[in-house]
Length: 107
Image (cartoon, rainbow, N blue to C red; front, side, top):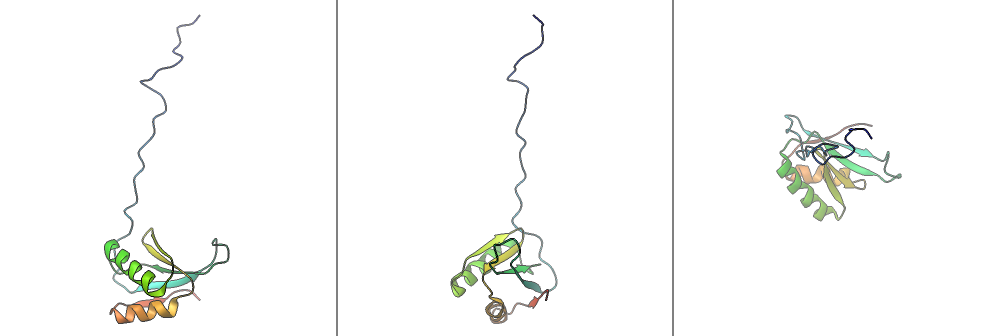
């Protein structure tokens, strides 16, 4: 027999701690941008708000308000707000009523 170590509890594969994303990015100076996406979503249309001009905590509040007002699903991912459905006109009206700027991005 050899004197090689077969098993040890002091060494081995250790799980590395993953850093959790902060849930948002720093607010931008310009207006919030809005676009429609359907790619990678099974053909379903989603209204995406990105380059948000407010903090993550305020973004969550706006998301919940829009979700309740429009009667749709919503999520906050990587500093973007995703609303299920084509809600560009309603989002534009919501932002105008709250004295915020939003512009349409893309085609």
